[in-house]
Amino acid sequence: MKKRFIATAALTTVAALALAGCSDPGTGGGGAAAGPADWPAQDADLSGTTLTIWAAQNSNTVPDSVVSAFEAATGATVDVVTIPDPYEQSVQTKVATGDRPDLAFWQPTASQLTALNASTNLQSLDGAPFIDAYTPELKDITGILDGTRYAALISTPAVEGVYYNKEVFAKAGITSTPTDWDSFLATARQLKAAGVTPFYDFGGGTPWATQWWVQVQLADAAKDGLWDRVNANEEKFTDPTIQGAIDTYQGLIQEGLFNADLKTATFEDQGPALLAGEAAMAVQVNSYFGQLQSLADTAELNEKIGFFPISPSGNVGTFIPDQANALVAFKTGDAAREAAARQLLSYWLGDGYADFVNAQKTVSLQSGVESSPEVPDALLAVSDSLGDSVGSMQALAVANPDLYLNLGDMIQGTQTPTQVAEATQAQFEELAKAIGTPGF
Image (cartoon, rainbow, N blue to C red; front, side):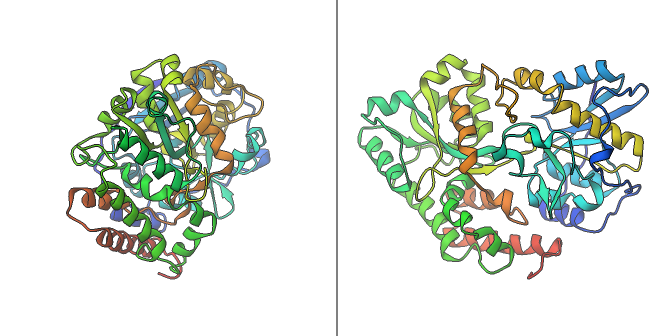
């Protein structure tokens, strides 16, 4: 296995998405879609074949165990190439100029598959031998665009929900977790009355977690077709549902339910604060738990940290797959390499999967493979919530505007909640037009 780091210039989000949404600007975009008969045996000889996997800086070690075993089993060489952040924009820029790997880590959502112009640039994974091995609730949760499967899920999608400090709850006399939004806020106010900071968030630097606060409030509406209506230009970010969620977030900040250094705090501050009990709760996704795992062992995490999903009417999680959760296979115009890429996917989620799960200390996606015994309880709770979860904006909307940046401006006092919604709607419309969405 070889690893390389490739530098590339990033475009702005709007420009990159617009490029990716056009007809294929690259070369060599042929290659027939893979079907059930086109999946080689997992151990077929690949001597002399070199495959390239593009990965982000936070996913470039994920393939290690699989790649080493696959090379030994097949004689192939697999070159893992690190694409610098911002990963998605950098990949889109390279693909738009005709540069393509064999495989790449990619967010398996409709908006991000559209951004890659999936029907032109990606192999179909329909008929893959590993599909039926997925647990039923995960089999079709993501990775599908316009009825075609383009992404292979390799780890459980992230869920927007609440990580909490069990010891802080116990000390404040809280014996059960909230069961809906109203009880969630009642718990926060009880904690504040006990002298505890209820919520920890961050607005310094890149405040990407701010949007989770809005999106968990939209879970019920998402189940009722909110993002379908937004995609059809029948509902807007400025209409009462999304605007109301933004207003509520601002109201909780003004009520003093967040850390005092909200404007300057960073992601790196959030994990230590929750572990130390400086705050009781954080609305976050799975990558946050990775930070907690770097700070404490499994025993300490099981003792201190719990998780529950939250939504207006109950405990419904909001799932948001990220690029580390899935892989896509590109059409390169080389039929042998395209087949070899499918073979690597088949091995990854076949003979190599159990070792991958244990190497990553992660939750298994397959009924026939046990999760790693080193998975903390909170991550098991995250996985358990997926069956009843609903898609996030990133999973269900045709485009992904910079809601989080606008919310960060709101925290800094440079945008009002109304301006946040207006700016997000304007960018959404621009992105939707760029990719040819009907109604825009």
